[in-house]
Length: 157
Image: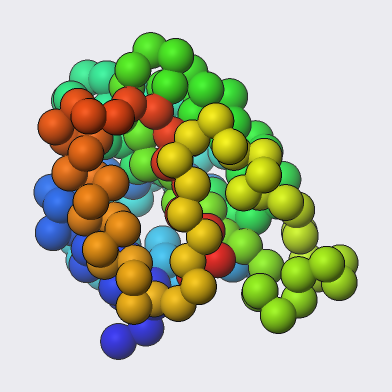
């Protein structure tokens, strides 16, 4: 099972039924896996709209809204929705792509210090997929139990 499938299965197990986002490198496989799990993927024109839609979903349902964005500029465009969710105490999960870790600092495609940019949120940089299930389960549980409200970024999968 690949990482994209693990992400999709974990999100589905948490009861997520809709994901908003913009598909591109490096999250194409994640979007395909999400749809294969029966989760409705709503393709948006830009990441800002996707993060606002996901945060509104969190507000309306009381369950985490989920947004899938590409690395670099995609994540930067999602920040406004993340801040909106945090300020309004709406549960939001943002899954962002990342350049390969072995290319950090080398100017890889859409490389940007995303983790540093998102310090206003709970941030997890996954070293490998073995800890993803634990992180996603704990963070979605915390969002569902209202222990923490705001954006979450999971990157480098």
